[in-house]
Image (tube, rainbow, N blue to C red; front, side, top):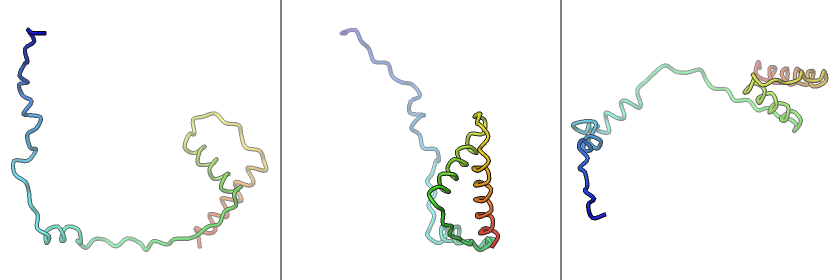
Length: 98
C-alpha cells in the first residue's frame, strides 16, 4: 500500500476539550458545609430480627420470584401451600407491627 494517505481527523480535538473552562476548587470548609448541612431528621430506624425455617425461606424465594415476574402463567398454589403462605404473612406482619 504505497499510495495510502492518512486523513487528518478534523474536529477530533472537540472530543477531548474540557467540559468546564476552569476547574472549580472547593476548600475543605465549603465541602464540609455542604456535607454536614443540617436537614430534616428521619424517623428512627428500627431493626427487627426474624427467624425462618429453610422451608419458609424457600417459600419466600418462590413468592419473590412470582412477584418479580407476574406476567408468567402459573398454576394456583395448592391449598396447604396457600395456607402456609398466609401463616408466613401473619408471622412477618406481627413482628413488623410490634
